[in-house]
Every structure is written in structure tokens, then in C-alpha cells.
Image (tube, rainbow, N blue to C red):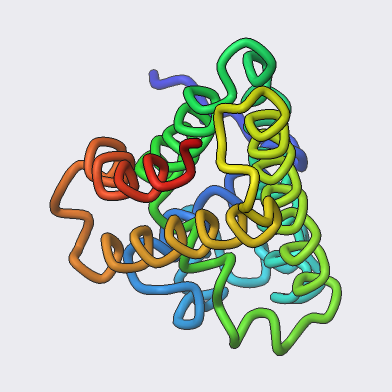
Length: 201
């Protein structure tokens, strides 16, 4: 006689729904994900989805919390060597972002979805804050490089950081549109290498 299937805890089921929403976003786009899609993928009924999340908007807020937590963790682990080698650290941090996106292809699609953010001010502010933090962290590394004579003194650190952030976004979205058919973790840093070199003193 087969063992009865163990029922998942509410927390585990919520986490599974969030991960499924992220995975489906990479496959069909976040704007097309429905609660029926989620139910089918998770293997539950649609009402079961709503037992864990009162609304579809609540699902996306949970997805947003998950993405923000991951990005914050990435940021905290990414600036440890700025004093010793600011230029190398700048490249390393950006390289980590490309690795993270290559492992979670839905991230750029979710972060920059106009439809999702138009429907939720809270989600828009959540994503805006984490992207601002990323830019500030990059600007901080550039300023350290300027203080050490590694980066050009005429650079406006915030503008340079914004340029990097927009380049990462553009390359990531293009990679997604191309069907993730090449190694973004390799291509991203390679394409941005001339930009980084232009920052050198």
C-alpha cells in the first residue's frame, strides 16, 4: 500500500505558489499569469490558491517581497572588497547581478512590468526602492574608486551608476526576448567591459 501524500504546510504552499508565479513569468510573461495557471502548475484547485492569498495582487506582493529579499541579499554580499579594488569590485557586483538574473530569468520581466506596477502602488514603490538601493551601492563603489584615483574624477558617480543599471536592464531584457539562448552571465560582463574601462582614471 502506498504512503498517503503528505500535506504541505500553509507556509510551504505559499512559497510554492510564489516560486511558481516567478517560473511562469519567465515562460509566458508576468502579465499573462492567471490564478488558474498557478493552480494547474501547483496541482491544486483555483479556490485553494485563494485560501493562501486573498487576491491575485497579494500573490504579486509576495513575489515582490521574495525578489526584493534576494536582491538585498545580493547587494549586502557584493561590496566587501571595494576599498582594496574598487574597479574589480564594480565589475564583480555587476557580474553577480547577471548571474542572479540568469538563474531567475523572470526577474527583469517582473521588475519592469508596467502592468503589474500600474495595478499596485505598493509593488511599484517596493521595486523602485530596491533599484534605487542598487544604484546607490554602485555609486558608492565608484566614489571609492575616485577617492583612490582608480576612477575618473570628472565622473558623476550617480550618473555612472545609473548608466550601469540601465545597461544591465537592457541586456537582461534583450536576453529574455531572445529566449535566454546564450549565457548572460558571460555575455553581460563582456559587453559592459568597455563601459567599465571608460570609467578608469
